[in-house]
Length: 405
Image (tube, rainbow, N blue to C red):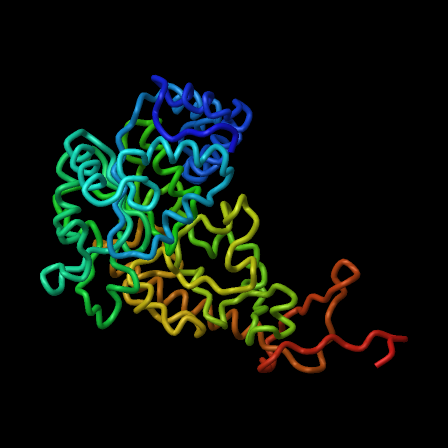
């Protein structure tokens, strides 16, 4: 990156970025990505005009030194790696260097007693607390200790003066793979420890980097937490199901499913529901934001969604490569806001309704071997499903006249 920014040297964030050689144009491009994330909720809710990149840039530029404590407990560092690889490295690395300079085990230079002292000093001030990783309660907390303290003790001490608390990643949100059966370490999420505090859950394994940075930017520019769903996830990123924005949705509606990996349906980009896609039960912005500057995402690469933004997905959604299981209490056709204890009856009805819709779609997907496809754009085929017999594999394209075997 142009210039080196290892510490806060000027009064405001904007001046520090300028010293690091970050141009206004690059900074606006970074803020444009954040604005796009915030716009997702505004567009769906019909609320007031969404914030612009210029407004975000002005707010961020005027920020004085923020204090951020970034804990890494029982986890794999995947979430901070995702954050570091989000979008424009030049700008985001500079911002993260400034935001995370107080305490972040992976990025900070100090270690040992110096690191402990940095954490103690940061904890003494009002600060934003970001947590990666679950908290193991088994064996008196011995499964994860930092500086001789259990993960629970470290978390409680850091939360005492925290103005806002973010649980980033599935491990911090509910425990993830560590908390899955049989949960040998007794792992739990942040909100199960800090029961008297609001915890903003940035779910995913890992979350998209831009969602993490957008949540932080929202806090810094708005001075308050974003609106959240029933699971504490920011609505701007978790209000809509993957299924609703999936580019393969038309194939689902048409009954065109991949049945085995690398079959003709897979080559044609058909729906991955039959090979285990959990998109109908997963709330996330993956189809819209994607990873690596919008380069791709799991379904775009031909792999079914495993539902990693949902709680208990390792237990509820496995085996991953089997069709979506019936998950009690989660209505497939419900919205995120409707999934809650007060609407369990409605959600169960949603599961039943979806089962009926699925049966209809599967019936529509059955086709006979005698059917012929329609040419699509001159180089592919579209199968029109009819309620006849559904074969185990998609029919092979008929031989083109004049083509040699």
